[in-house]
Length: 169
Image (cartoon, rainbow, N blue to C red; front, top):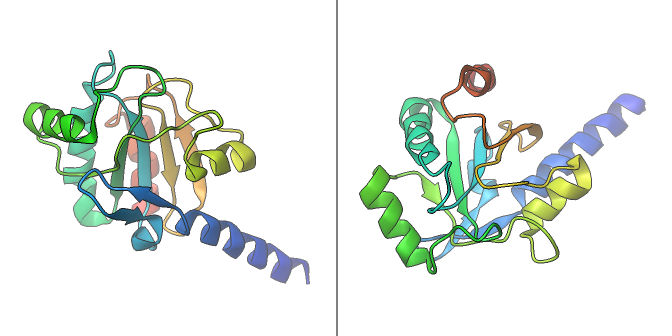
């Protein structure tokens, strides 16, 4: 019975993550359920931050591990007052400056009362709230929270890529 209960709880948590939708920077929706079966790295970003150069590393992750199944999702946020004024400006900046082709949401709140439901879920279930731009959240192929990383962890760091490679096996 305990084993069945554990499986049910596991499936419920995965379903919760899969049920989240973001507004896409291109219009329309980004539904996390579309990524079921793939590990996902979600990063809150900003265009005018000292860590903005990490967009290059995020694109490299996307190019290196995307064909193997990894999804890299950028979540631009102005919660730390370092984002451009519109999603259109953010998209143009990221494409021109970093050649970004990875998935990107529209400008989204990641902390506090106005936080997106995904980030509220992270806070409630895992005690995680981004303390700055470029905090990273890694989910496994079932949508389960695996780990989080601060701004100082670069996207192509061994610490992160080893975990991604393990999830892709």
